[in-house]
Amino acid sequence: MNISPATGALGAHVDGLDLTALDATQFAALKSALDEHLVLYVAGQDLDRHQLSALGRRFGPLFRHPIVDNGFADCPEVLELLREPEDKIMFGGESWHADITWMNPAGYVSILHGIELPPVGGDTAFASNIAAFETLSDGLKSFLRGQSAYHSYHWYEHREDPDYTALQPVVRRHPASGREGLYVNRMFTSRFDGMTAKESAPILDHLFAHMEQHPFTCRFRWQKGGVILWDNRFTLHYPINDFHGVRRRMIRTTSLEA
Image (cartoon, rainbow, N blue to C red):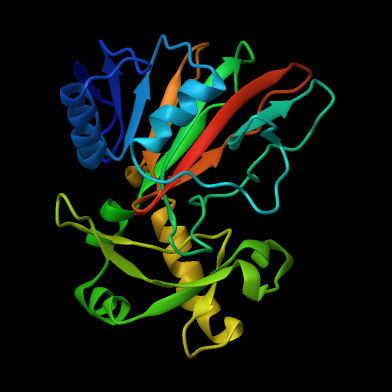
């Protein structure tokens, strides 16, 4: 397995693996690389939905979306992300976010596989919550370590549905590296515990803008057969909507924290 870092902040390209046939040693090496780089791009793969599900299950129990209904009938934990040529909107929303922060247990590793891709465009960008936290002032770090915040699936509609809302720590420590990272995101984080959304907004908006700065990011260009694995606990991602009039088909699964 060969690993080439993508940027100084996060991300790496991985070569020399068949993700459908990982032995225990190879999987441990893959997980270790994910712990270090937070996002991995593995080229030249050919996984069906059942193989993708099996890979995701090695990281933890798989998430079955209670709202979105584009899972496969025989494999509902795998979502089909299909955009037809006439579609205008990207699945997942055009905003920085992490997957499944609005429930407990929360999202851990997401795995996205490119099946049909546009000739150009549709890249996915990622940001390191760890790099973002480490560059905050000591005073703000100290304040945030003692905070929790609400994450709600329907916050894009500015409402907190109690069935799809979870209270999460604002700062998390990576269990392998020990480094701390922010655990808030623009799409789902509504407010700090004990504060209103209006009171929370100035601090949250500052954090969102800080986390999304270029020095903390990387960007992967998709090629057919590519697979990206990322750690939702310590990254944000952004699907870039810059292609039109062509078909794009991907499949994705997400494991939950154990």
